[in-house]
Image 1: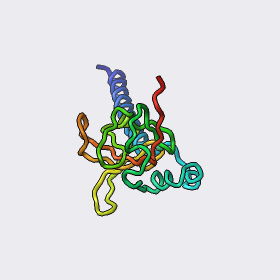
Image 2: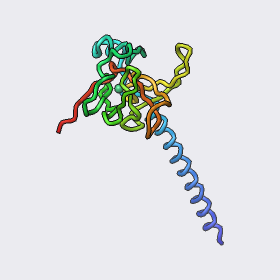
Image 3: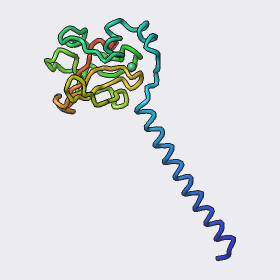
Image 4: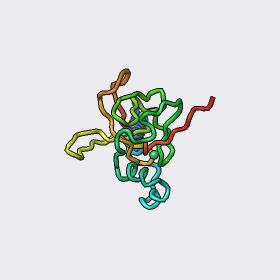
Length: 168
Ligand SMILES: [Zn+2]
């Protein structure tokens, strides 16, 4: 092998390694940003003017409505439940079930990208808080005591949701 061929080979393999490295770096950045950072960012004042006092208390201040008082715990229409703050679709009526807990309960979300989860240790309990991935609004909590097929129970405040019936 002559010297110039050798040099070409070496520079080619360096370029290949470099492009591989930058590719995997980019991939890592993308997955972190899409999962953790809300896309809809408003000041608390803006949210306050757009939401009802009850919606604001739940979505922005992580409040909880009293059991059996919300609009949707006993709601059985066919349609889609969306985030009351940003409108992102979160749950379908076909994954809603009667949990008896007094809040609307679902065994799965529309897809895994619409929900962010975070460990919540408030009130002396260890729970998993669920939030809308698009605006960061508090929705409720998720518990591992739901029905099949997922075994999960998304326990959600009615006040964080709006319902749109399916049109035939
Ligand atoms: Zn939202």
